[in-house]
Length: 306
Ligand SMILES: [Mn+2]
Image (cartoon, rainbow, N blue to C red; front, side, top):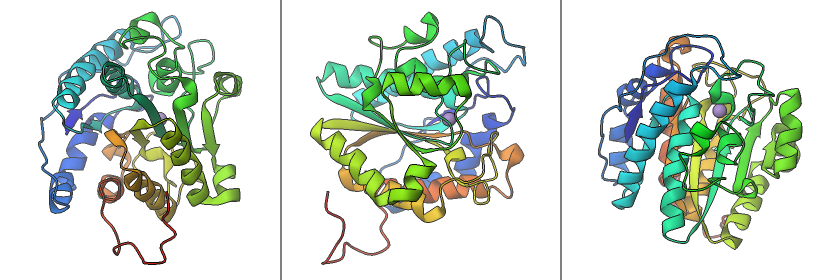
């Protein structure tokens, strides 16, 4: 576990407290009880939030670059030693750093990488489409090759990940100009209507079949704002109509069953907006499923085929 106490990419302050909220809610104990060996590397250091307005279309570009460089280095070192890095966020711009590291790792091993991006937002803005300039609305575009040179160059190549290897789950808020970019890039976005109509099981089945066909590793980038705000109030950008508790659990359980996850981001937990740390606690419940916690052992008539 690598704590990343940054909110330099966000519009609201407070995600800086996310890593500690996850620790206080007991993430290490929960994972240890699943039989995992857990090491907490503490928090990375990075620039403070200068609370400046956007410059040239970006807020805090320089600060975000430094944070993401530090993350890239730390995550790469861990994954290269055979560990499974978990980034405790922190705002979602920080995933540019973790994905840069994981993509580099996969490229060196000639393995494909797929990213499962669980989020209310597409996070596919550029400086031309973003209404705010907040970089946490841009990380998918940047990993897919659209964005400022300073952040693109953190990757081993441009794009870090082929857009068609990015799968989004839970989407329900896409800015007007951003929609065209998402469609043009070929990102596989499963929005809430899609989930409503065909169900989480079918969505995840489709995604994981695709990943299997590519024989890829999976990086999971989980923004807690994907969850319905009634169960996850502690986020800066609540959007109604999000994933239910069971939809989110099934998503995580199925990713675990694929046995392909090599790294995880737990992002955008904002204790300043939370109620009794409930959002961090919920994130840990979901992380437990990602790491194999099961309600019961697989049923003999299991509907859990790959
Ligand atoms: Mn996000």
